[in-house]
Length: 443
Image (tube, rainbow, N blue to C red; front, side):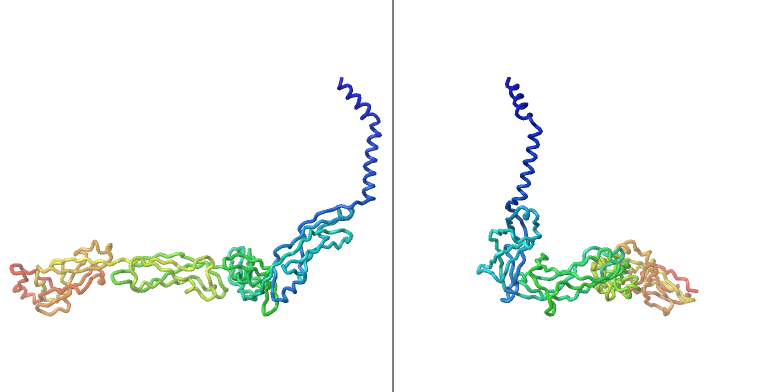
């Protein structure tokens, strides 16, 4: 029952003359738009973040001070005016300024916003002000350092740079000037194959390497304000050369150098002027082991041996060298008469060791590995009778089986009897009871 009533209502009230009702609505909207455009009512609009220009900065400089904006670098404001005007405005149509000549005792000044496009509108800044901090001016002479970014082309490197001026006078607030440690300019060398020049704006850094806002500073050179410096970058070709280590000097007594050493790096990459690198095919590194012992290690600075103007490309600053010095040891070897050969007996003579039971001690010296297997047979001991006189004489032992330098001290003297062959039957070597065995005379 209720649904029938609703259906009748919709049919009679809503659907009846529907076309006229739609037309009426359209006409109403058009009339409203016409009224709006004709009446052009007042409306408001908010703009945000307009940069504020600072006027009359010289008013601060005239009292030998500088300023820093604490508040009011940008301003938000509300614009009121006719709709037709307001809706077409952009923030770029406005300008804002603060006049430092009008600073109040609390270092604040009004921010004024203007619209050059239309002066009929109202601008409300809600009494926004620029607040500044003043401090005395200070100056400081600061070195300019060049930082390079990127990598030169393969086979090339940054050899050197020149910056002009290399010292800049920085002026600004005393608190910030006291923090300035140096000025840096960054130059991109990525892919460079030849030398080039660039103009770069310097940036201030403190002792911890943190950047300081350079907009607070004035840079000058010889009294003239500057905004950038000229940087000349020199690009060199690189060259890889071997390192040759030459060991010299005598180690500590009791040690011997047997040519065992190692070092790193075995080659280095260098760069420099073509004249300096053209004939540089290797690098000699001398190592003095005078007085050294054991495993002697040393770091040799490369810069001491590179030609003027030539530098290493990578991080190598030193050649690390280890020289193996082996400790000498001694060994005593006992020889009997039977271990000694008699040589060069004069013709017609015979020679015999007087004391056939005598023992002769020989001391050999060397590294343990070399002397551990040396026995009396290896010595090949002999005595040379070439210059012996007839009768009893003393001849020094000689050795054929080992290097002469391995024998420590004086070689033992051997008592030898040299007689005419016919008289040897009367000679009885010591000890008594043993018959001497004559040595055949030398031919």
